[in-house]
Image (cartoon, rainbow over the protein chains, first blue to last red):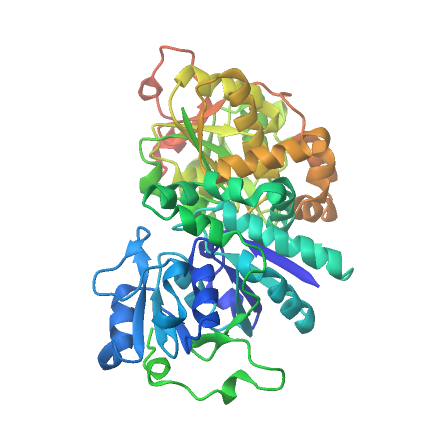
Length: 261
Length: 261
């Protein structure tokens, strides 16, 4: 098994991810938000790469069964229902809803991986469930860190490194790592003893704490708090289907059919 | 003093580097080659981002005072005089010559930094000289790792981390680091005890050893073996001028005047 890590989605283009098995990590906060939303009963999350796409996709359905979520500069976008804090995506807010998610980094990375063979969303909250999924698949994987506007993000790299570490511990076949996977592993070993300190000290953690989201930092480093695997199924992200149900079999929602970007 | 590290030139565009102080690192091998070439008496090195540019810039002067150097897939380009191994850039080969250098990663990163306020070339061979230059400047710096075709390269990151470490040791004012600078520092601390093992094990080190350049790996991890600072002066890279001589005062060569890309 070969594991390639990319520290930023600008390092890998859509064609390179085509038909690959892909994990997208955006610890702060799109991955953590998607995990929370689906766990709390959202029908699906539809990642889009621009506000214009979010408005277009939600269209006439907006406000009924479709909500818009996301952020610019960490804050909720005008005219949207939800921001990008996992704590907002409660059962009361999202049960049965389709969420159009537009974030600066995570949703952009997920859109880039839309032609992947399999695309799963990972963060610390669901890391062991993701490990089970990778081992069950048993094939090579590309791990794409969302980063921050094309830049390296420490929290995503450490999470990628934790995946490398856990896979290596559980499967002796995980032998081939690219340079970034090796580096991520080193970073995880350095920070594993105090992930909260790491996330409070990293660039985006400091920024989010500064605008009032310090509590999100604690939520986002909770290991295995929400053991689900969000996966791309057609144009939308849903909880991983039981074995045997192929993604093509899922009946698309009206919002999913409106995805055009 | 703020130190920002970028693990790949695709993470930072030309405008972001404009009027900044920039260090470009390409341990394997453009930085190491430039350091060797200028130390051995080359008049200047002119980095270009494509083979077409190399041919255009060298023009009628080719073969007389102008040599073409560089690589594709690590090997010398057809019609060029030199490859990208520091060992080729001997005094006999390069003294008094202008070298048009076209490499896959390093020269591309250097071209991207062409509008920097100051741009210096760094590798393990000249690292302490670069530290002196940074401290003498006393301003913020952006360190751009050339990486490998947009990807993260461990050897460049470790070299960037060594710069962060040495600066931190020598100047208590080095306090602000971006996430990548923090990560680079961690990587350097992990690999500092055995740089040769690191470079033999990294992606590009293994590739170069496989095509016959194992000796270059040893050359490229020699700390402070060539204590010079190559710097951008106009369109060309020359040895750092003595204090007081501004880069504008240097009279351009015919090859330098032909740089058009």
